[in-house]
Image 1 (tube, each protein chain N blue to C red):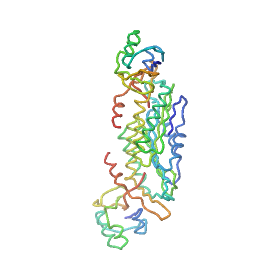
Image 2 (image 1 turned 45 degrees about the vertical axis):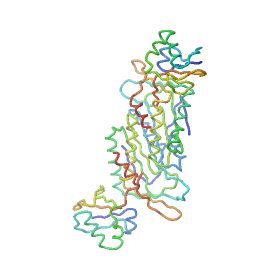
Image 3 (image 1 turned 180 degrees about the vertical axis):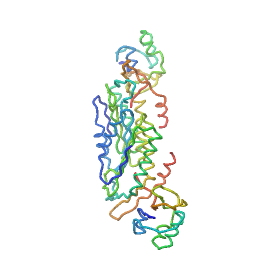
Image 4 (image 1 turned 90 degrees about the vertical axis):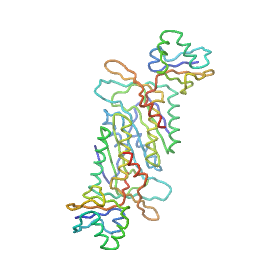
Length: 146
Length: 146
Length: 81
Length: 81
């Protein structure tokens, strides 16, 4: 289990390959990557604030729970904070399991908890100023599945 | 949309990174990778037979349907055939969408159809000989979701 | 038309493909003709619930018409992914 | 104890953290004390349904006890991932 909270960019290709290459007893690897969308609404940057200490603890707990519930061989969470430009990768999760259903479910579980139970707050910077991103009802709803 | 059927290995890290880096308008990228399991049951190799011509057509059709149903920005399927050693990657799919739910669902859809509607047949080679892998009821069941 | 066999169907029949001259109207008619040929065909086509068929590279059912088709393929349930 | 503020709660109150001497028994008691201090606190804590609280870095409810706790954090619903 590997949890990293960092300001620096990460290399998705290298992380995904390294994760998958150590999964010979698993068979199924799912990754999710979140990217700052570069859409035509004048977004200049995404700023991500977090709660040092609690963030690492919350992510480790989420990863442990996923690992136990789906008998994962491995789980990985990388989440950045600070200022990110459009097109930059915000975070990734990866889950390795013997069967695809477990790998998919575990990755979705990790994402659903990251969205609304890990202490990160996103702020969008546009030409018109800065706006805190609001929590979505759909994200809270998604947690009920688990 | 990118569909590749090949005997040669592929570089998962490079493919995943290339796929994700071209997804600036998407926000959510999900990948799935299938690996020949290296378990303690004496598996020496996995041989994958396919139906040249029909394979490419079936994968393209599955990818097109996924792209349409979930408004994907991009979809990728790579599937190998021939003889693979334990630990080698068999295949990967990737899906890029504006929101994570769509990216996850599309990737699961691609996998469910690959499992039992794309003309591949797996054979396990062990010390005791060769055995064709049987289709699983659970895989047929999984298709009903869509 | 060309008739193709894959996986254990290919192994049981002993060849990957052959040219078949037939007036069979449906896949099932063709299966009956093949079954009547030789024991290895009868063995391969003994349990149709364990087989799948594609006509001109599209999955279909055993009652599908095949007149005018170029390529019929028989194989076990697929195990991709 | 240390009281921490994040995101727009931090902006509204104007500081990221402060030392608070309190005999508050629950989170809610602490909120009432802070509200009574100054307008900026009253504004930040006006709508508790828009706030979340963590006691010693664990998410909890506003009726949770805080005696003996070292660190209370207030923030809006999280938006990670």
